[in-house]
Image (cartoon, rainbow, N blue to C red; front, top):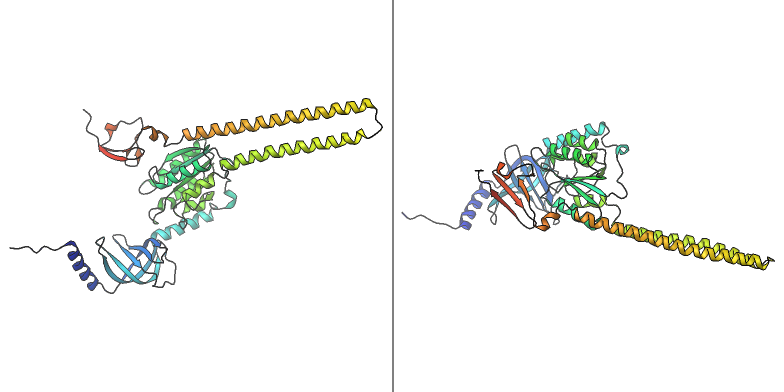
Length: 394
């Protein structure tokens, strides 16, 4: 008996034909998730309920009379299509009407209204960022792009600042509790300002930053907090409660370093210049007064005394200039030492020397724990990661 063998393309085309013929015109009710509008104008999102979801595409040519947002319930009309390169099916949406708002969106609005009525968002409660923070507390994932953006931006703008990094869960079960705990621990440190955040994601991905436990931790923080959660278009409860909201983690690092190292050096140079000008003006004033006196009927003895005073002023000017130059040089040397010290304290610097971090899932394995207590661990070096299984301890 001969078995008919077909290619992947032939199979996909048969499935495509069957699906597109059977679901040529359908209407589906669901909740919008992970909505994105491409620069081309095309919209990409998913429609989901409690048990399933389906990817959707709505082309730029299809008109919308409302602004879709994650969490909104809608009815979409269109057809089921197959995308052969990935072998996946999706809905080609021709129209979409709002039906209502999903549970997450309603929960977000309810908590937002509750906290607003309790004064959590009041301007009077907001704390200012120090003009020159030397220690910055950071709470985010140790493996995401957010921590790299924060560290690189801080190093570029003000390398003398020390980063106090608290690795944190930013998604999934236990994330909200871990974020609240991280804020509590960073408050106990000597950080001058705190940054909490993560990269972008869907409403579900960012949900731990929309919880009351995190809102309470931010509100009760004794140190100023900058919230840098998601992308510029993402807003969370944390953004409203925090003392300052940054559009991205990178923007949060920029906000935490209001004065760059270049601006600081420029300020010191200008201070030196202004001091020299002030001294020069006073000396010129005294010199003019002395010149006026020399034209009067004072005796030669008085003129000699005035010349002595003038010479003393010149000597005073030289001493002051030396002291100012010495003081400025001392400040610059101190800043240079601080910059070198800050670079040496970079939390990822040990990886440059060949050291590695050990993880069990998202948890760091510290010196108090033996690797034999874990079945599988992840080893993170500077340029590579590997997961290994740990044999039972003999």
